[in-house]
Length: 297
Image (cartoon, rainbow, N blue to C red; front, top):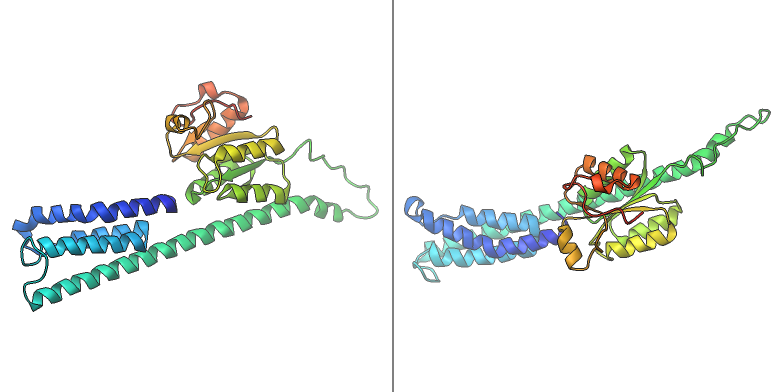
């Protein structure tokens, strides 16, 4: 789940979750008594872990209002009946705020670790590309002076194909890179269109295959594909998205007939889709793996 979609889910949980917890508490009230607080703590933790501190605080506020109205005296009313009741409500608020803060901090640390992992992966790939480019020069430097130079196969005859993966989903991006590497591609990984174009300019490699998310954070996937096609006429473009194909086409986000690999996908589905696109066999592709046609060749 991307960060933006996680925030929307967190805000939704912060609004709907306390209502569900209150309904569950009222249902179990005759059995377990008035202080049924565990469901509220669970909702607060879930909203904070998925959406962050903002949704967590909203869940705390909504839960506090529901608990005060239904589960603390006076019944079906706001306020407090006596000093112990007031202290109990303060304890609930303190625990709820503590849970929201700790869970939001845990989410922030997790996102930071994922970003650092993606950054290190990009640096590692950049180092691999540099080594690939300088290796022929190192081989030439090892040739003895008195020996005849060894014949080198021109890069135009036996090039190593290059694949570009552009997606803001780090898990899908990592899976795609590993699958393409298993096919013999060296890969460039980018979280948005800007980074993708920077990598292509920096390494000046002929891009053979591009896996592009239809909805990139900074640019539509089709716009990025058009820029890549202008630089690499023989590139094979495969789009991917977690939005259904028909919806993308009806909203004008993806032209009819373009190839789409639905998310989530497996490495086997990606490999099969790329091979079928290159071979021009989109009419025999499984429906669950690829939608559309191979118009992007």
